[in-house]
Amino acid sequence: LAVSEKPKACLRPMRLLLYLATHLSDDHAACLTCWPAMLAHAPLLRTADVLVYAGGPAAAVPAARLSWQSIVNALPNRNATIFFSVFNPGYQDGAKYAMHVALTSGWFDAYEWVVRINPDVMVFDESRLTLAMAGLFGPSPGRYEGVFASCRRNKPCYGRGCEHGLIQTDVLAVRPDVVPRDAFACWNSSVPRSDPECGFARSGAESHAEEQATRAFRPIVQRRADAWLNLNHTSGSLCRINTGGLRHLDTHKRPSDRLLCAKACPVWKAADPWQRFVELSQHLARKRAAKKAAESSGGPGTDGAVRRARSAGAAHRAAKKAARKLARNAAPE
Image 1: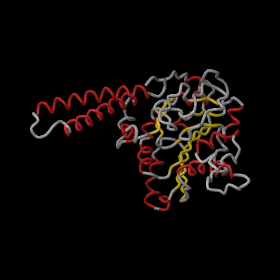
Image 2: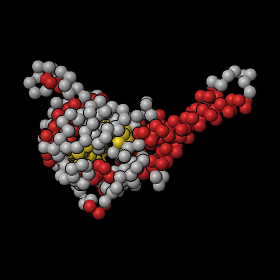
Image 3: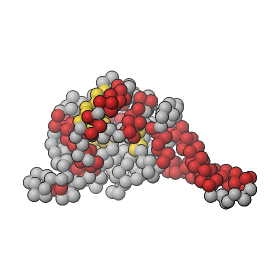
Image 4: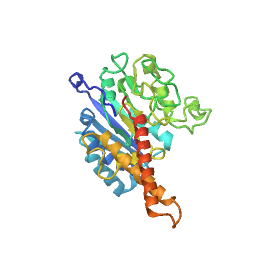
């Protein structure tokens, strides 16, 4: 993982909020448990306030609330709060509704920047994000109002004014004073098509959170106040960020991602988290390949030495393949 240059002397303190939204899943809880160790490598994000919007039926369960409260209390940030709600309108609408509640409730008003981020988006290197917020990043540095990543299915965004970008919602940063309070008012994609204000959302034009976010933040792009984290478009699978020092877990396509939120958080307790992640991923690939080779290396008459040789060879090839794949997906260039 190539680490970006960090001119820390140029980064002034800013009124910053990390706004997390969760449906109170076990996976999100496991990842957020690793945030204290992760934030040890992100000094600016560690100074931010944290607000967690926790929406889902589990919010009505006292034991679940207590568990999540203890996870949030363990964060190293000076001010960390969790807001519980039993209401969750679903996968896509829930992401939009979390933004709607925050904007209309004025939760962002006191802040210069808000970073909207999922609990399972892990930060290997904060520099590209924080430098962009400070106006020190990109091909045309200066004041920015939004820092985004574009989904892979659209063309890359190489700089300001990228109107074809489809804005990812797993992580983004905006200056809240330039975002209208009603920017996500049409969060409900189930409204009738005849609805005069939000019927277009029901028609499918904004059925996904990324589509609504793209519309909501379009004025920022039109003012050419937009910075993009994935300048040369290495975001990985569709709308899950895997660039700019940030990695959104995708355990279906990248099983090794589970290591990022494993018990005891071994990746984040290392001096170099990315290097440790690579090492653990290669070890995991060797184990899986050896097991698979042992299971398919002939019947009971096959010589034991032959089986072991096949297993070792498969493990070696799997480790090399894992290393190449991780190198291709390495976040900051």
